[in-house]
Image (cartoon, rainbow, N blue to C red):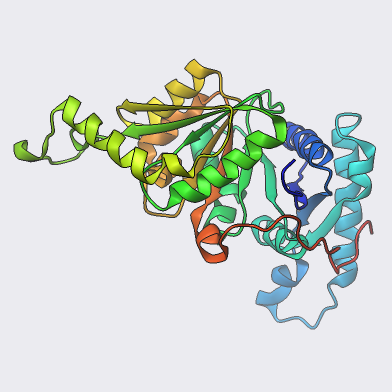
Amino acid sequence: MDAQWNPVVVGLDATPGAAAAARVAWDIARIAETTCYPVHAIRDQAAEVAPYQLPMDVAPMNRVLAELAQGELKRAFGEEVPPRLLERLEIRPGRPAVVLAAVAAASDAELIVLGGKHRGTLGRWLAGSTAHDLLRLGGHPVLVTGPGARLPRRVLAAVDLSEAAKATLTVAQRFAALFQAELLVLHVVEVAALVPGAVVLPEAILDDELLLKRTEQWFDTAVWPLVHYAKVDRRIVRGQVTPTVRAQAAKWGADVVALGSHGKNWVDRLLLGSTTERLIADLPTSLLVVPAARAAREGPRAPGGTHQRMSWTTNP
């Protein structure tokens, strides 16, 4: 590794998706020679009794719920999760996204890992879930493990031509380097005429060849200089973003698709759009979503970092 990795945080609940996420997070931390913090959030009894304005000490209630949750998780996971990981389990009351963000901030985490629930479509899960809540908080990259999640041999970085590309490529290259995986940088030329509901004047529609040429020139100027990884290839294709990313990921055999998110570009429509929810349902990969806001705010990450243990009580 060219730089030390900071800790990995994994969110756990009693679902098969969480067990897969735990295994992936454990392996990432092992290969990166860093710490893996498993975290489970329970309902905060202080919030439950607040509307009734009762003078209650809810700490004992939270401790009981934490003990019950710990037993439930151990039974649910069985031998699927390394016992040493569960020994480190952090249980804290609060909303899952807020709890995970607090743990990640306290440990200066490199990555938060979550398991896909696959309730209906992955798109719908992302749009209304802990994963998307974390992305709205904008603090850390979030890896959502897909079906049959495994350590990546191929990482596809889907980038647009916005400021989000830099953060996406930084994280994707670092992630690929950890596993010595192949990297494919994909840009989809999204033509307005192909977007459902778009109104396009005839003079605004460019010839295909000219459009691709202009895009490639801008890609060469603004995006490709950000790539410094050896095992890398590039691909610029024309089409609607969601089905094109899905098709390219399947065609190339990507294990992870890295996307940038800053609330403005096509990646956010990919995660949130109602049409996209149907299209992304069978995306055959894990998703690594990178919030551009943090990268822009902090600049490049220095090697290493501060590894501080969280301050609340663990293993009740």
